[in-house]
Each structure stands twice: as structure tokens, then as C-alpha cells.
Image (cartoon, rainbow, N blue to C red; front, side, top):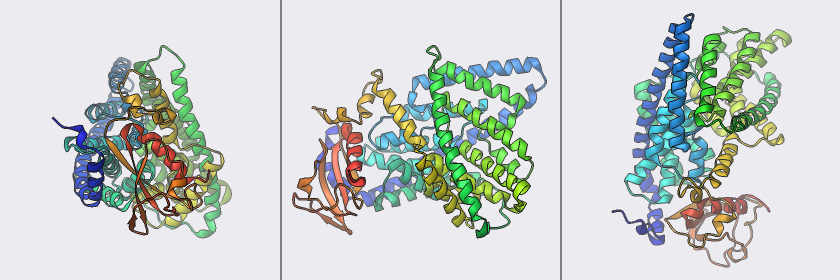
Length: 542
């Protein structure tokens, strides 16, 4: 029987000293495991999309078959609802859940999440819901990392590193985008990086991408070509489009959260009832407008091939937007990542096509605006501009648009910040935490999600020890003050200080400087609370 007491303070510190070497080897293993899991998931979803198209072709125009198909959709909703009830952590995209666990605010069980998320995501895409594969792929990859950690009997600190590696590998395998997978894991999931983490995440990401691309091929996700680079005298249009994308991104975030609220208002509407609404909506749209079903990759093909008129693009955008809200708000296991890229592409298409009709824009640049709008819309919604830029150039295979990608992403980012739109995954994580604090059904999970003063008042903190790293920013509370002058969080021990590549022993009179990297230790129960408190100390001036 495994002894949890071996994960004590001395063991955690000694193992952390060997992290740079240990993590690379383990990241290679996690990348292989996560890559295989997500590869199987991609293949399953490919069949789900193929079967859905065949089913719609068979039932269209036959009333009896249509009735039978709607009965099947209700059955799919019931099965998916049972899966969500059995394992609530599979609801939604899965990215907030991974972020919450890496930050020490949530707990997941890979043995339950892996099969339930895989099956639930497959059933939702088979039913035609407007969801993507990327969120589930990230969660599946992270759970693969957790599984490797548990099977190897690693400590909590190491487990969170391996989950970050798994998340990176999941996105890399899902989109053939290893650099974007690496940046997303650091920028959105782990929210920080060190050299050892950077190398290990890159190792996992490249490993997963190699495995996936070996089977699925090396072609980028988007195969359309850009004939010309957008001239710099057109960049004023990018600024206008960036503002539009920032506003539309803020509206998207509010709409998705509002959709969740609307589903929760009818008290009698349980998991199955909410999903039934989404599946039935998919059934109706499958008969009248099948192009909006699923993640929407075919819409980008039609748009970039010039097969859609302006009026049709506007109509499709509205329907796809509303259907995405209906699908995601229901709590179905599926992501918003790819559908939001499709919506962003359509905003760019509408903007460029209107420019051609009314302002004399050269039609050769329409696809440029389509591509650039994906990055801008992603940035406004997720608030991860570097990931957005890298993701789009990896998915398109085009590196000639880097400057214009940066311009539109910065414009969209600033606009979203000015209108005070909270990043979507942070909003969703906050809702999960708020719901689980009031849920005493899941034994131990409320302890894992504690993130306020409640966590600080644990009188009997137990469990494994967790190490976390933070970098002191210029102008923050810690800069220029000595260790003894700081009101450190409860149950937090400062064990290491790295400055300009040299490790110092932190003493009471040690003066902290901007750029110092602090390593703190806490109990796993308090990790979420400590993370929030340390972020306030290191990154803010109050």
C-alpha cells in the first residue's frame, strides 16, 4: 500500500531539486499517453461527424425516419445526462476544470473523467451540437497526465506539472499545433512558467503532435491559402475590426453565461432535460440548416472558397451564435474553442465583404480578414493573445501574417479590457467553484475548491505538500521590502528565492527585488487560497 506520508516537506524539496531532469522524462511519457488518447478522440469524432451527415441524408424528406431520429436524439440526451450526473466535472469544455485543479481549487478523478468525457463528447458531436474538440482534448490530456502521476505515485506538485504537460499535449494533438499547445498551457492553464516547466511542456506537446500527425497527417487544420499579404496602408481597417471583435467577444462571453443562467431557471430541468433541449434544437437545425451543426469547420471552407453571399454569412453567423449558446449553456461535454474561431471567421468575412461592396476593398484580401479575425475574436474571449496568434498561424500554415495578427489581437484585447469583459474560462471557473462550495455531496471536493478565508482557517491542514513558484513584478507589494516586513498568507512557507540565476537563502532581512522568483510551500488543501494571495502580493501594488 502506498504511503502518503512519504510526500513530506523534505521529500518534496529534495525531489524539486531534480525537477528539470525528472520532468523531461515524465513529460515524454505524458505526451505519448495524452497524444494517443486525443488521437483516438479525434478519430471517434471524425466518425461521429461522418455518421451524422449520413443519418441526415437518410431522414430528410421521410417523416417516419425524422420521428425516429428525434427519438434517437432524446436517447443520446438521456445517456449524456446520466454521464454528466455520474461525473459532473465533464460538463462544459473542461478547460476551467483543469485550470482549477492546477491552481489547487478543484479535484478531479482521471478514472472517471477520462471515459465519461470521451463518451459524452462523442455523443454530443454525433447529435450535432455546436461544440468543439479542443476543450475536451485539453481535459483528456490533463487527465492522462494525472493518471501517469497517480500510477507512478508522484506528489501533488509534480502531478500539477504533469497535468499542465498533458493539457499542452491535448491541444497539440487536437489541432496539430505544438507551439500553441505549449503557450496555452503556460498562459491559460498554469499562468506562469519556469525553465523546467517550459522544456517539459514543450517535450510533451511535440511528442503528442508527432504521434497525432503520424496518423492524421501533417496538413494544417485550415487548408485555404492567402494569395497576398495585407498591405500596411490597410492596417487602419484592422484597428476598426479589432474594436468590433473586442466588443463582439465581450458580448459572446455574456451570452454564454446568460445561456447557462436561463437553463438553470426552470427548477425541474435537470441535466437530462437541459441536454434534451440542445439535442432537439440540433435535430431541427439538421433539417433546415445543417451547416451550423457540429464545430463548423465546413463553414470556413465555404466562406474562404467564396461560396457564401454576404446576407447568407450574416444569417449563418446569427444562427450559429444562438445555437452555440444553446449547446454550451446546456452543460454538454464539449468545447467552445473551435466554434468561436468559426464565429470570428464569419465576423471577418462580413467585415471584408461589406468593405468590398461599399468601400472598394480588393476581394483578394477577404481571406486575410477571415484568418485575422479568428485570432482577434479568440483574444477578446479567452484573453490569451500570444496563444491566439501562434494558434492561427499554426492552424493555417501561414507565417506571413504575424504583424497583422499582432495588430488585430492587441486591438481586440484592449477593447475587451476597456469594456471590463472577464475572460470566459475565468468566469466559468468562478461559477464552478461557487457551485461546488455549496455542494456537500462530493466528499472532499469542497475542500479542494476552497479559495477564500475559509481555506486559511483550516486548523488541521493535512495531505501532501505543494510547491508553487511566483515572480515578483516591478511596482508590486513585495518589491523593495524585506521578507520580515511582508504579511505572508497563513499556512505558507517561503523556501527558496532565485535571483539572476542564483539561488539565495531567504532570510528575514533579505530585500526582495523585481524579477525574483519565489518558491513557497503549502498544504494541498490551501494551495488555491495561497495561489490567489501570492498573486496579489507579487503582481499588484496594493
